[in-house]
Image (cartoon, rainbow, N blue to C red; front, side):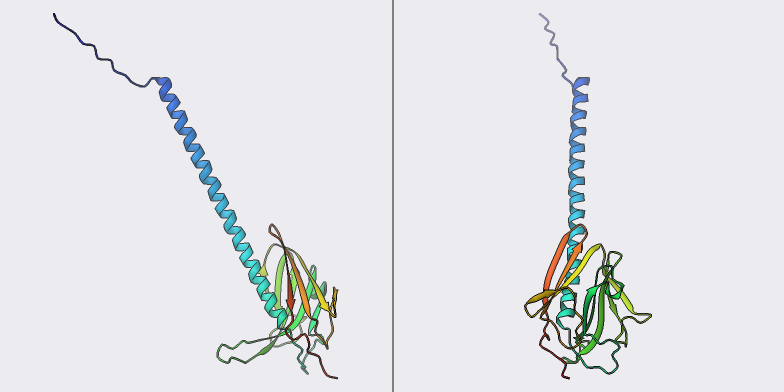
Length: 206
């Protein structure tokens, strides 16, 4: 007897192939969405980190300048105050700060200190540091203006003296104990720091 065997060939139907394509497409889209979310999160985190680093650098610079405010008798001074803090000072949109500080500008001479006339102000959401070369007057026609950081929406200060907080200071003969600086960074929040003045007991002798 002759036996004829029949071999059955199994394959994917059109419906199964379409279903597989749909599944792989959905998986690819999900993977792409996850990748985009991770990428956007990474960019946002890096941006926030950069902003926080910039703001920390600004706070540290303010801390250094304010803590080293000094009273220095200078016959050439056009400004009678060695610390001046008030609203709209130096054409600031909020608080302005004028100060005379001592800094070591020499890398070779350890104890070589030089007095610097500086100012801080908020202008068009930019925190600016102002300096006047070879002058004690920041109101000269061509001061040096450096933008320290952008996206600042608030810049305020308070002064601590004899157990009380005051909002203005312009005494030319005595320095307060501390200065509180408040900076509002757009999209981040508010940072506040109390800065102790190292020369707060210094007074001019009459």
